[in-house]
Image (cartoon, rainbow, N blue to C red):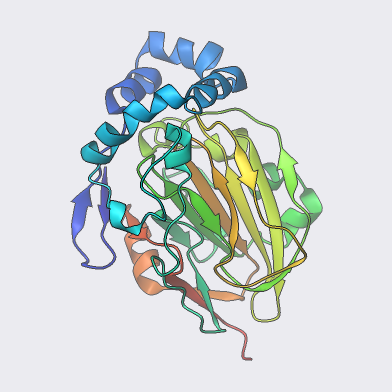
Length: 293
């Protein structure tokens, strides 16, 4: 799996966790049968998540850090009570500088990003499949607001920092939960089943800002994600405030923007057009408002 390193512009190859297992699940007849009958079920992910909460799971931390070359210097703490304690780690306050420009929106998570200026004109992941907003939001009235709007997808790999943050400041709606399955959101899986985002468990919140309108921030669960935890309280947020975190597993954050509200950064759109994701960090600018202050 190749992606662009945004800082250097270099095309890199991603190291995929459990790659052989994912290939077997999504490309082998026996694996596909296992996927449909067992792996996608909540029970499997919940049980594995519970295992990652046990003190004995700490033995997995150091090999994981070594395998994925994770920089420990940004961690708030160095000792953990379980693998999930490590997985949901907080970073030092200055580890992710936030672009505070009022007219900018920032990445809500560390990960690999795909960006589309107009959902209605953009094929998603594979030619011929279009992102189904109605199915994704499970709300026909709300979906109408975003039919011709912008779409940003940030995929978090298991090695990434797994707390997610608000991309803009504004007033916040209550959280909406939509039940679903627990398919993997790894590109190896997405190439086989492009409708995964509309099948998986997901939650979303709407942040309202005069410069960006109503922005949907959605978190999508995946295979082995123990749970999505919302930590924010209150009805107003500042850009960069923590919204919540994912327990163990790769996951995704999806942003939906109304038409003519955001100008997504050109490099992200171009790389997506080429068929590649781009690496981003929390607080890094991904677009600017099309509305004058």
